[in-house]
Length: 305
Ligand SMILES: [Zn+2]
Ligand SMILES: [Zn+2]
Image (cartoon, rainbow, N blue to C red; front, side, top):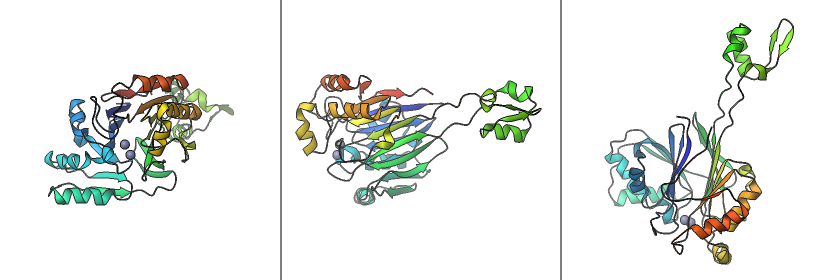
C-alpha cells in the first residue's frame, strides 16, 4: 500500500467529447484517496476504474466552471444512497458553498452524512490540510475566474535503523530514538555516524495539479523540482492568442513551464474538443519537454517510492 498513484477520470475541457469526460482525477497516497475536481462523468469513470466512491475523504475543487463541478452534486447524492456516514470535506473557491447548497436544496437531495465546505482564500500558497500520509497546499493560478492549483506532498517517512546496528551496539530505547531523530551514536568514546546506523531516508513524493490557467501571472516557485506536474494544454501553440484570451495554455507553453521548473514528468490534459486526437498536442510538448505524457481517461501513473 505504498502508492502515490494518479488516475485520470476525465481530461477534456468544456464538455464530454471524443471518449473524454471533463476534468476529474483521483490521487491515491498509500490508500488515502483524494478527488480533484468533479466534472460530469466522474461517477461513471469511478465505477469503470473500480474506485470506491465511499473511500473519498477529501475533495479539491479548482474553480467553479461547469466542466470541473457539474459532477459534484450527483456525487454527493450518491454517497448518501451508498449509506455513507463518514464526514466529507470539500475545499474550493468562494461560491462553492452556495453552489452545493443550492443544488442540493432545489433537487431536494437528502444528505445523511456531514459535508464541510472550506472556501479557500486565494492570495498565495496556502496550506489546506494534512493527513498522516500527505499534505495539501493550494495556490492561485491565472484563469478567467478565481482558480487554484493544488500541491500534494507525501509526508516524509520515518528513518529506519539497521537491525544489525541495534544489536551490534546494544542500543537502548533512548539511543534508538536519538538516532531516528538524526543524531550520531557514542560508543567507547567514539562517534558512530548516523548514516552508518540507518537506511537512507526514502524521498517524499510530490504532485501538482494546475487546472485551467495561463502560464503567466502566477507564482510557481513552490513547484520547482516536483515529481509530477499536471498542467492544462487546451490548445496547440498555433492558437496561443485564443488560449490567452480564454485563460488557457498551449501544449508548448505547458512544456516550457515544466522544463523551467525542472519537474520530473509532465502530464497534459484539459484538451479542447476541437482535437479528436491528442497526438499533435503531445508531440508539440515533447519537442520541448520529452518526458511529457498525454493524459487520457483511465490513465494510471504511479510514482515509485
Ligand atoms: Zn475547464
Ligand atoms: Zn475553467
